[in-house]
Image (cartoon, rainbow, N blue to C red; front, side, top):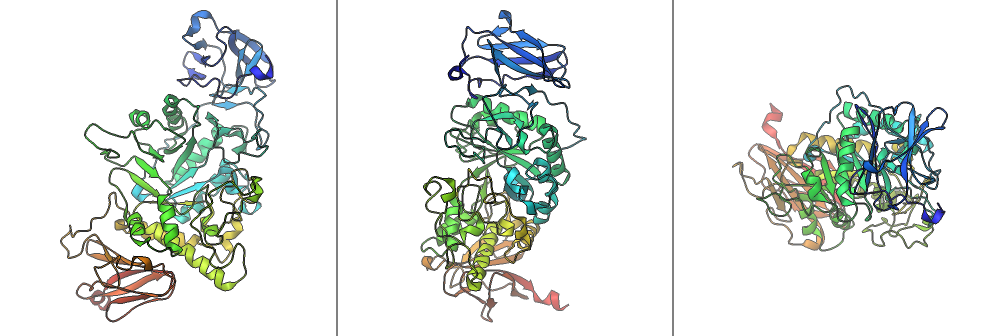
Length: 598
């Protein structure tokens, strides 16, 4: 068969997951030939793993064909000793739905022109492993790239850039308060882009969707190493969520099967599905996925008979909306854009009862949090596209100087702005998410689209934990505060009425006068008061470049307003006003003075 007629990676994608599966009676092999020559001869080649020599070549029989699908049972296939390929006439094809492959690839060595011998993964001993099943309102997400997370020499792990390397950093994530990691594509994919000659470092392309990425494994068996990683996270009461990107040519009917496979085989706790026209209704109907987290950019198709759009009436929220709308609004807010106050307040409050929202200031395809306050413009020159790639408008502000600087005032302002962003993120009602390295001031040198960078640009420099700009401890404190006070993260949006009958609504807004807000929308100053069980917390926000004075409601009897934390100078006056320095956020509480004196 000529090179031009060789099947591509997508040629054997069909409507169903036709793959090799183990049964008590032997191994069942299925092949979909819908996109192939219907008159060709197809079959299975079986190899001895120890030598790599073919020991059997079995052609499919006519009676084993149903429509365009061949299925055969081979009783004597030994999953511990044998590997296989499908063949078409004299050409051997890689099974793109295989669970594993006999060759261990290193990053950058992927070659689709060469048929890979496929394996079935042996059963893993999960030892009673179970999902923590943490609700969205109690979650704190941390998105990471498996290779980039520990590839840098400063990571200090033994197995750099691998699943095992991620496992070695679980203690760090737990200290931050992280409840779940979101892995960028960690299934097998070809990182070599022949069209551009550059890496597809992220992996948002057609994939081998049923096996962990070989190059992310420190051992010869990525399946076992991936299971061990998930098991380790679960032992620490943390979840593992996978990003799954599906290209437009991948059949939508197969997507639920892929998610079900990772749920059953690898105990994955949830999925962020990426791509156009995700089959949300099919995912919703899957009984296996009924208790998995499903995160998507659109929730169209998620309905029940008695509900309207989005309203799933689930007992526990299962779906989450992933959108950059929070990011864009709050980025503009902290950089003091005019006329954004009311929209920012709405984003901070948004928390639907029927689905969750994921809030973030940065992600894999944006400026990092550090670069957000260090660059006015993207700097993607290293990508080789003349800086044309990536988003042109990032709602960013460099705090007075573009890029790296040694000016103390600029550096101090940047650290303050990072803390302003983090405090808003964790005190917003949705589920907070940070991108790897946000806790240590990680920079991508102003690159907001490092999709092809397998270098120091995308490898996390762990030395940042020891630098002055590290926000690691600050994030751990914020996650603790959020965990300790349920009114920051309820399962539904807070009401603006006094439903408890204690004299204060659950949520109220205040400005230069108590109980009045948005009068000077252009000033970006507002007080947000939260009330639950008689406890009052007031978040005083001034994102203007001048100092601001906000009014506090009259404190309850025997109580006095006290500042718990502030990102800069702030004070409460005798007449119950809070004076804030420019670009400053303070957390204030009504403290019972009589109890303290006793």
